[in-house]
Length: 224
Image (cartoon, rainbow, N blue to C red):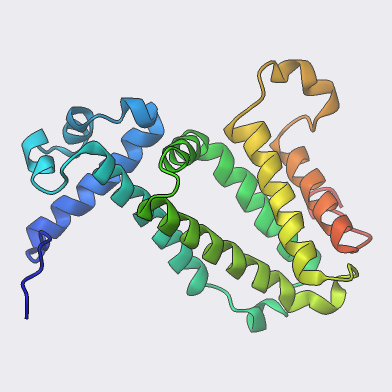
């Protein structure tokens, strides 16, 4: 059997070093963006030497690819092992929608810089094996979220529940990218036309999402 040509992290110290390196890479990427995520800066953040990084990864791009795929894989795994459609059927659709969208608003706000850097990095590598794998992971995660909502298929009045949930979620994601991750220049001038804060944004996004699905009578649990 041919010997693998990758550096295996078979020792505990080696595995811990790799974990620290990928965590540091994620943190530096979120703090300094793609251009600022240099090998020396990542090495210093991880408490390693640049040479030790180059022994594992031939360049910065290879390191960033591994870190970003790790983020997406953990995200998909958490969704795969989390709540099942059967368990979710006990939770009212409006409550679940509010929980999901609240979580999205909080996550996009707290991780805006990291999400922006990840999106820019992936888009800069279109039609590469890395970009295709990143896309597959994102689609898999998205499909699992859609399937959870479809546990309430009977409550959805739209003629095509799957398309409705998918399109509705894409509208929520697009709005969050527009307002939070890649905010429009001169956003202050738009304040009178937009929700005043993230709490109001969450309520309006949930209302719009449920309305698109044909669910009426939504009242936020925080504004009841």
